[in-house]
Length: 330
Image 1 (spheres, rainbow, N blue to C red):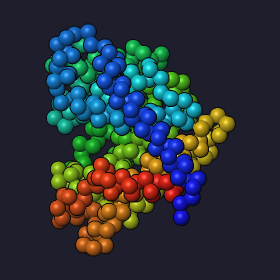
Image 2: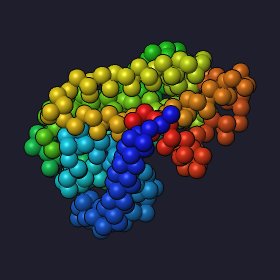
Image 3: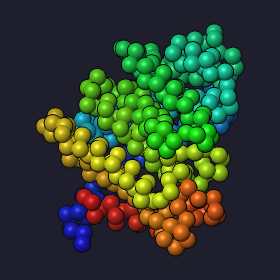
Image 4: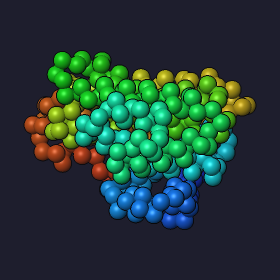
């Protein structure tokens, strides 16, 4: 039974989340455009009329909460310069996703990533990517850790192109997801002030990995329909998915508990992480019901209609489930 104290904590943390969401919405309407620092009107017009603008806003919502969660661990909110860098990286990310999806000249793209020079850009899309990267690099006192993380993410993305290969083992698929999410999380973590603390960077990597594993679980059907093999849609049973997610979640909790509580806000972080991780619990419970009633596991998801595997986190029923289940963990 949920206690009064747990309800009070739930109200406190969900109110904080609403405040962060409102401040992000305000930022996107007011300061976002200025933080992208366009000097060329043509370039700016291209961005706002491209599909990247809407995808950037989606990236901003996810990654802004990621940044706030790491800052919470340090007992503060995100600063203006950090938000600016997050905006530029979130604007750049969907462009690089396209480079991989459209089989662009990857050696050329790799060169743009590690040495972004407008003279080397061959089209408007590449010009945009270079612009956002240079905005970020100009603000970093030491660019090398960010560039190194970007190179590692590039390799993980390159490896993910092989996910249609039937010979890749489930362990290899899991490794690709961990590295894709991990190095993405690390890149964002390196944009936070005083990000030289190894403990914080390790947590940033782990949170990024956990987020990618969650995405793979939520996208079981769509990835499989597109011929993309992931650790999630190759799992024979929901229980095997649960084991991987639980193991990853427990490892993060263990690291946080081992951190110095007088230096970091570990208690608040763990409570927010409990709420965050409850979303994947809802998906696994829905898949378990399918497995129980239909005898069909994740690897055979295409045998049923897509709607069976879609976990609608905007439905009132799932929002209520999320709140009640997460509050019980506090």
